[in-house]
Amino acid sequence: MRTPYEPGTRCLLIQSRFSDSSFWNYVDVCKLVGAKYPAAPLGLMTVAALLPQEWEFKLVDANVEPLLDAHFEWADIVCTGGMLPQQHGIRAVIERAHRHGCPVVVGGPDPTSQPALYDAADYRVLGEGEATIPLFLQDLERGATSGTYRSADRPDMTQAVVPRFDLIRFRDYVQVGIQFSRGCPFNCEFCDIIQLYGRQFRSKTPAQVLAELQALYDLGYRGHVDFVDDNFVGNKTRVKQLLPALRAWSRAHGYPFYFTTEASLELAGDDELLRMMRDVDFRFVFIGIETPEEAVLAAIHKKQNLKTPVARSVRKLSAYGMTVNGGFILGFDNESERIADHMIECIQSSGICMAMLGTLYALPNTQLTQRLEREGRLFEQGSTIRNHHTDVDQMTSGLNFITARPRLDILTDYARVLKHIYEPRHYFARVTHAGLHLKPANKYRPSFFKRLRTLKAFLKVCRQLGLNRRTGRLYWKMLLTVLLRNPRAIEQAVNLAAMFIHFDRQSRFIVETMNGKIEHIENHSEEHYNQLMLQEAAGANASRQFSSVLVE
Image 1 (spheres, rainbow, N blue to C red):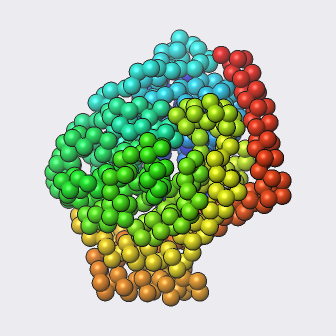
Image 2 (cartoon, rainbow, N blue to C red; image 1 turned 135 degrees about the vertical axis):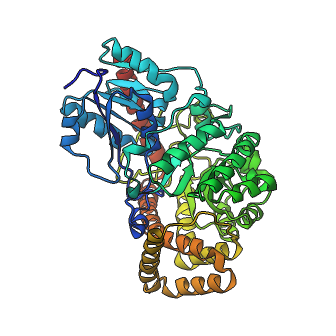
Image 3 (cartoon, one colour; image 1 turned 135 degrees about the horizontal axis):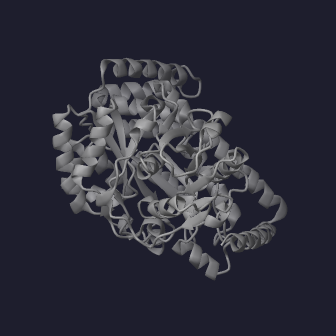
């Protein structure tokens, strides 16, 4: 094994698995088009580009291929990290690497938010890699065998590197991501993005974005590119500088890509920006809607969602060719007793098919967490995945605090809303609604072989949904309705229908998990549940503080 930092050092980058039951892990739908997983690991590809290019790299995404002992035997150093739902997997990678004698570098959002949970790692590179990886490398060159690296600096995005897209197999993924900006100007109480990346919008130049697209193009990639920004329109002036350059580049290259992103709901109020996004073929946008109740939005400082009704905003976005995926949350302090009815009406009337509904989670270091801690309502100082079989993402984990409304009512409402919106009749009604209102302006044209693969996928969808007793009549009715009344939207409607294959299975898992929690509270009382969680958290916090003292 080489000493790290020598030329030729073999660096193994590992993306740990996400649960098959996660909202975003629609592998059963990916298989229809010959892919293995939705999204490529952009974070690790960026890390690889920030490390010495004299090193030899191998990226293993455990979501698309098995992580083998041979991978560790090849490596001189291992890099891993990720988000809260990957916590168990990241820690398992650290343990496994050490069994093979490999030093481990860990980073990413969850290690940055709660580094004490990752004290087993040899090196903890926290915060944004552009600022802290150089500190790590300097220490490594001096022979350091461990260390924790932080920086108060917010990296200048105009100095960002092009990710190492060459380290993945494009055929394994439905989409590849790029990043334009970091930071969000808003101040939502529950959100940790502003803690991780700040409220100042920092972006790459148009030339940098085009360089990344050119790199993808030169490597032969075509199709779906996702702007992974937490709020793509956080600075509309910068976005409006990017989009004309993106349009010119796309036109010159024959429109090789179409795009998706995440944005705030206020996007619907800017027709100029919507036209510009339509002209470069943006097709999906994920929007954090959170709740339809205005009093709650005001209380959580999400006032940007108060400007226009959700259904009207979604319809506006549909008119510019963009399908809306929405994020919703139950469990806010001052939500009403009729929140379930309001949530169902909001989702159904707006026609949002891919509705990510979760229960409120107090993430580390957020304003929400700080307030709950002051009020003596927080169960633990940090976020620990206790059961990686059921705590898979924010749809199964949440309410890690003493709730204002009875917990039993929140969980009952949650299960009720999920059952309703993913019941076949209601889901396909939304697909029909979306299909009738969408006005696509598609520029990207797939190759003959991709068209052939799409046709095969369509036939598979027809077999799985059209010949199914629960969905058959609903699927064919939706298909004929959209085909006759808005045929341009038929591709998108079929895509949304296909997602039911995933959501049906996933929502059943979540409802079953919630029913188990409901039964426990009914049998033992909510007060008993709260006391049990507080006692368990007190032990976990004490252990974490002790470990932190030993490490620091």
